[in-house]
Amino acid sequence: MTLVFLGLLILLIGLVVRSTLGKPDLVLKITIHMLGGIVGLWLCDFLLSIFGFAIPINFFTIILVGLLGFPGVIALVVLQLLGI
Image 1 (cartoon, rainbow, N blue to C red):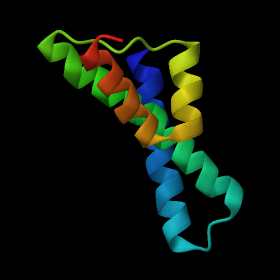
Image 2 (image 1 turned 90 degrees about the vertical axis):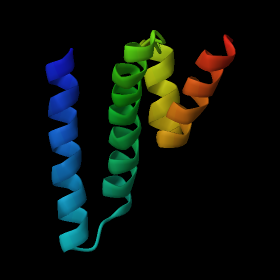
Image 3 (image 1 turned 30 degrees about the vertical axis):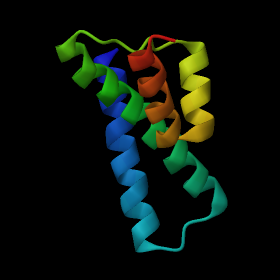
Image 4 (image 1 turned 45 degrees about the vertical axis):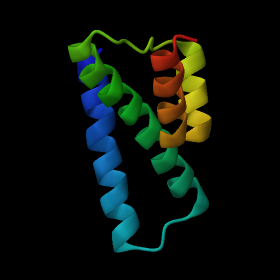
């Protein structure tokens, strides 16, 4: 699973570099937004696991983060810390 997220991180970096070199279209912006949220979810889950918190990575959380991007990750972290 970690290799999948590392591959998504590399893809995200490539897309960000591509968008900075040229004029990004709408699809590229949406893809960067979604991948940024998914990679952010993985990073937050990885870093919070050190402190004993875990954000479950399932269909619902991936859809939420895919739609909202990184603000969705922050919302999931807050909900997890509140115990909801």
